Image 1: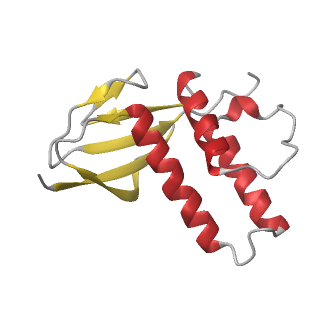
Image 2 (image 1 turned 90 degrees about the vertical axis):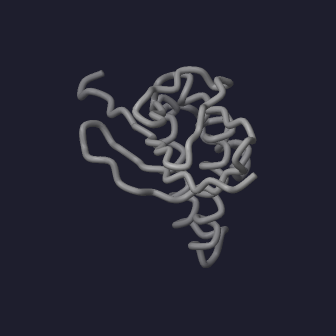
Length: 138
């Protein structure tokens, strides 16, 4: 078995996709949307932690809050957590966002619609996270 380098792209609405990161996945290991989203969130979380000079800084908390809202914009009105959010919180929010169509996944041009659906992969597979933009006024 070999590793596959999956190029993960982000697309916001009708804008052209942009490369976000590369995810190394073991060929032959089944990949589901749930696992893909979890891995993506964990990578982004680690990047944010590394980028923040002081993880307890107000600026780092504000950046994290923006990331969490981007994962699931329907949580905007939700009460603020009573504790510092964890990576598990971020994963939960992202998975809920997928379920509520805050974003969707395209793998090799085909939409993945279920979290536990196995995604067939090729060495040249492309994954695009498409974030939907709410319409003005609702």
